[in-house]
Length: 282
Image (cartoon, rainbow, N blue to C red):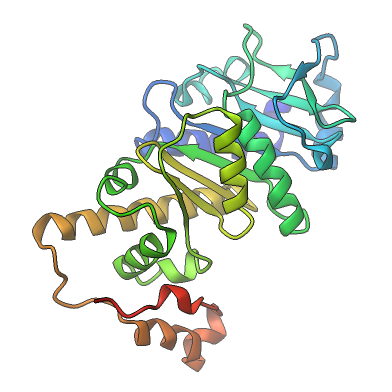
């Protein structure tokens, strides 16, 4: 099978196009990676080449040894992923030590994986462990409303979670574990990779203040849906805050608890909400 005919490639390209159409990617901003299933690798291996050199990852991810990742290229534009796929992303193989990678397909005009590749791999390693291998997608982009909100809310995941939950009823269902938040950090380095991976032990969303959002999920649809939901909630919250500093009414802690106890609702959408997010506001 050709790489571009594979279902996983089509999903990768569709998410990239969706992100571009939603204005989450200016110029070459953002990045996407997917940990391929063994059967997906075997289905397209006929197109792989093994002539490119091994390069240092810049991080150690031994639990990802031998894995293959589909990943966008550094300096590449998301708008071109569906237009010029073989130039815009690649498939990489991780070596047996988990410290090096090589490109086996794609980036035909040269280049390397995204500068955030170490962050992606470190977080893939965490998600592979904590979800028993179920999570395979990591997506980073620069959504306008989340970034704007990071200038207003404190760098506190408990506060962010509560405010986003109050913005839209579906939020505590879609990200019941909450969101994590990091203050501004230099992008693409080891420090932000480590700090994000610490958040990913608990959360599927990490907010990078004044920079963007980093999401993990089991499928392309669920990962993009999670990202889109957080950004939509941030937009609602910003519109409310632009009108008034105090909400006349909102979803209360008791309302949130009802989501867990209402027999009809909870039978369809079972959620468990941590009480730390249901604090009484002053």
